[in-house]
Image (cartoon, rainbow, N blue to C red; front, side, top):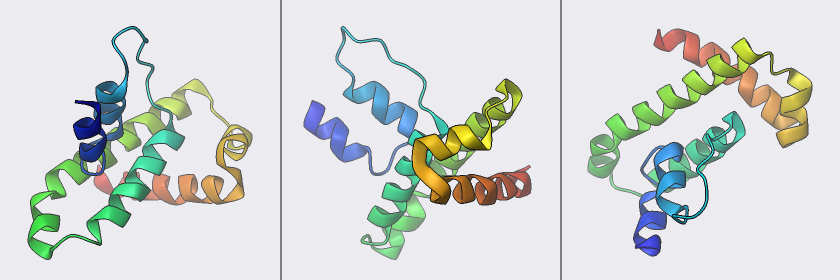
Length: 109
């Protein structure tokens, strides 16, 4: 079951994949924005290797993952997560990606 779940992680939202790959005795913690962003990048890389028909069929899952990441970013902002915190998680590239992603999230509303 774990191998199947790991294979599905390339097309499902991060939170679902994390829940599927956790062992029953561990607690499931909410994914960070960094986790969401890594998952989306991996998903995009995997999608490029799929046929256009498969890419189109997976768009609802991709959109769901984006919306989850936007919700996490919104939560981070409410909780006062600072740019320095993002820098510690993923460096200057992650900070830039968060800023760009925040603008993207605004277009989804």
